[in-house]
Image (cartoon, rainbow, N blue to C red; front, side):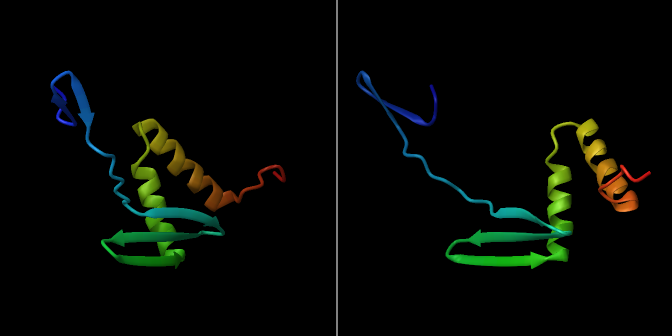
Length: 89
């Protein structure tokens, strides 16, 4: 039996859906991002270069495979060293 479904006679009643927000993170360009955390009724909103480091660490950690994580980190390293436009070389 599924714990989310209650059976009453021949009818199954599902528990109502409840959304739990863990926060919002958005990259906005030029090594800046915005972060919003919610804890109850309190909302904490941050932005700037320091939040970009937090965004990068969460983005890299959430990659599905180790290979993807390495490729993302290597791409960020290449961009930092050579810039975004490699056609000039």
